[in-house]
Image (cartoon, rainbow, N blue to C red; front, side, top):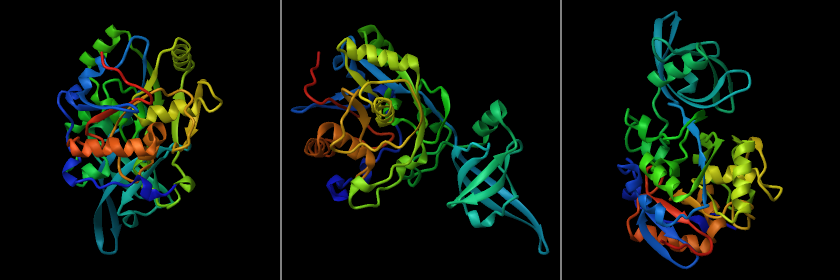
Length: 354
């Protein structure tokens, strides 16, 4: 299985830099084994049915991009340097792993000031990352970070425009609860309160799980034989209540439909023994063609990068040839791609519209 098997040409103008407004007005490509239908996210009420269960990732994206200054006094006098920081993940010792540019401008023990309230000292450097200890913790840290930080937009958006205040709303799901992600579960960005209400009235259930999406989600696959690729690890939790809800849906004949690849990876991590169980820890599950799905019956997801692990995941669910046809249709019909783009509902077997 070669990396080139998961490649396609994507015109630059198909990369969305702003989301649809309202959220649920985004386009929705619905595909099963035989048909492709062009619809809207708001029309999910016609594709889901009573007894189905959507699995939603309730991670909360932190404004992880920070810009600060390092000051230093030397024989030449007082000097300063502008330092750009992207927080990656909290570490067990209380520091944060972070990308720092330019890293060579900061020495261990020096302090970077981001605002009047927020600063951090560089405690160590390892694997090209800095380990930062902030001057604040808990709610005080959250408040200061919200004030000083910017949303960590994906590289393909950040290359086109800087993050702004609107992104603090746009790049966050409406059910975000547990802080810790540095990338959004983007399929979930299509949901708004009116759509959730309509789905609930239809008899669709909702289960919340937590997977803190890391910057590793954007890492390219560098090996030609994709089966040798090493996935990054991300922390997640499937509570006993969530596992029980999913198991009950399966037992009753309903469909379990994760919203986004993060929710799918998490519930399949919790079901490696064959059935869903409560689970907590770091998962580096890598899903590519040949994978056996134990819980997932369908998937709602955005359109993914060429040569990416996420494209391999949807190919595992639908088959490589079918995904090739689905993406060719999306390109031909001018769907918007990636984090702020349009969505797809992928249904192995047959999908029926009511």
